[in-house]
Length: 331
Image (tube, rainbow, N blue to C red):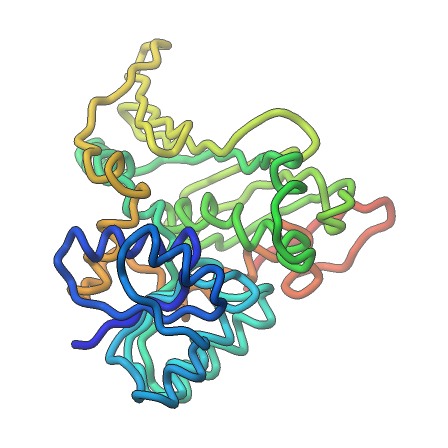
């Protein structure tokens, strides 16, 4: 099956390195001369200039494609591919600038009958794979707590459109929530509060909440984008507490103990390539959807992201004076 890699920026370079290591033939489609030249100098792989519209007009659609363009171009590029006849697409997260754009893409994909997955690569981390096996032996997850703090100064310095930063929870923080959903299930009830505002993220600066998933697993979360912190997730079983902080590393606390121990894992692929992306790409190419986040899944999850982040598009309850946004049961 023919394969196109759409994009010639940093993330496309990651995919190119992986596809080359796999020995998988592919073509690269870029848009700007500058990024195409940098890509070629770095990889030695030729880039077709002119963007997706020109490429499709010139040779027709590929059977499958990996879309690794800027966030503001993800939905447009994916839509052009599936409307043009590409049957399978792996698109970088979050698939669009905001949930409205993602929902529109979802309708297009459904209409043409294409298969699209969103690249939430944390699902494929070696640390997560090892933890899944240990959790299964323990008898399953009892509860979960996660932190969603972002490095605000780092985000401010990023060279990207303000519209992307204004939806930063969707663009980046959703990685953590997606991972929790993949392991614990969808929130059946969710109470969310947001407070404050940031110049680059007007919706909120602080995020707290809790709920119960459709598997009966209670969870809670916290994030303060004006304070120090980092992403982290803790899963509790009847035997252990598993800690992913950073997400690439697995630690555990055994029952009746307070000692945090690092779990040794085979993470060679995550050290050689961008973590999770090799196994994610392999699963896509082999049509193994066991861990995949389908676009339909992602459209549904956007309601959750909007609610936690305080975005008006998907918030389940009205705004209350003072900047607090309590939300009730998700339907």
